[in-house]
Amino acid sequence: MNAELHAGGNTWRSLPAAQQPDWPDQEALRDVIAELESYPPLVFAGECDQLRQRLGAVARGEAFLLQGGDCAEAFDAVGADQIRNKLKTLLQMGAVLTYAGSVPVVKVGRIAGQYSKPRSKPTETRDGVTLPTYRGDSVNGFAFTPEARTPDPQRLKRMYQASASTLNLVRAFTTGGYADLRQVHAWNQDFVKSSPSGQRYEALAREIDRAMNFMNACGVDPEEFKTVEFYASHEALVLDYESALTRVDSRTGDLYDVSGHMVWIGERTRQLDGAHIEFASKIRNPIGVKLGPTTTPEDALTLIERLDPEREPGRLTFITRMGADKVRDKLPTLVEKVTASGAQVAWICDPMHGNTFEAASGHKTRRFDDVLDEVKGFFEVHKGLGTHPGGIHVELTGDDVTECVGGGDEIFVDDLHQRYETACDPRLNRSQSLDLAFLVAEMYRDQ
Image 1 (cartoon, rainbow, N blue to C red):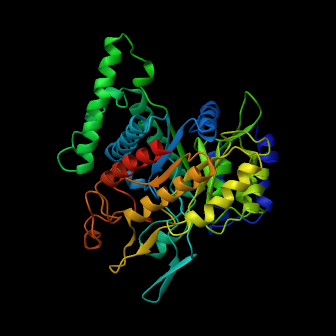
Image 2 (spheres, rainbow, N blue to C red):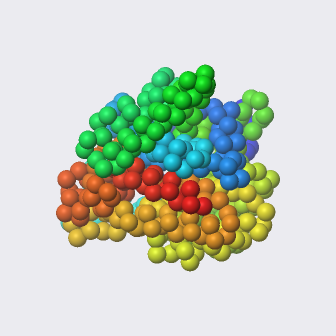
Image 3 (cartoon, rainbow, N blue to C red):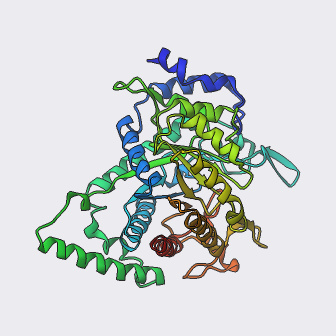
């Protein structure tokens, strides 16, 4: 198996790899990689195939993708409460989109592997001291000390363990009764009195209840209501980790990255002649690629050629992150040219990454109105072209943080310091996430 893997899964090593940690101890890294190669898979090839089929429905216009979770997961946030809160928010958003938007929703978390972050600068300077930048818990620590900021390959093993713990709990929640649609009220109990979006959700939950009671009275009680399909995704950034968790599938002989069901390539690492595209081209997982405002139609068509040569619906997802001020100008040509080429990709809107700014307090933040406006622009473009707005990709948390300004339960710039807990990018809190789900459901219905 290793001979097969090294023949196919490590071809990226001869190419330039952007955004990789500068590991000081190469021997320690080799030892860690060898150990990771012996670990069991975190997900199974058959599950990745199933997600590819579900995303095929998204690409054909038959379903909607909800992808959400942390900007960067942290090793100290793998407790049951944090994971449940995140899952609960995604389940609530999924219920809103399915019921209010009348569309099947494919649920994918930015979870169980999102421990690495690309950065705009390799170093950070404070008070005359320069240290390596924080690249996520998988690489180094957040504390501004030489010890914490030195990349440590042992952290890759901790990423595996944290991802395994998270997936274990997610599987238990999604198949063990917690995700049963009869729980729509229970997911909201702590929330309904305190938040306008919680109250709006409660009204929708009552409608779902009535519909389910009606079906029950007719003798219909589908198994699908009792569990939920939930998939894990993350950015395939640290290639040493991703290739150490790449395995040959015994059924087909194909390679799968078993660190997550779906992996994506970021805006900073999608160089056409780079290592990340080469790595992704060799694995059978569903692949996402982030496309920012500088993406040309030629870039998009070359990415399709490299990553989806068979033109297989569900294989390739384009996650656009244009910014509210650019989406209406930049997106139409891309969608037009890709559609004209005959490729069937899933088009997803990431309304977070193009809309970040720094508040006077120094906090990195986003305006809820900008997030919403980018989603609106995304829907308008697809409506104008007669193509399918396939989904949203959102940085969110199930906790009542104060990281993005605005929303129905409004957060002001002066509130940011109250619960600003992210290690990297600002996330929507639970109330803002539900507001967004209701608004997206309305836009989808209007299509």
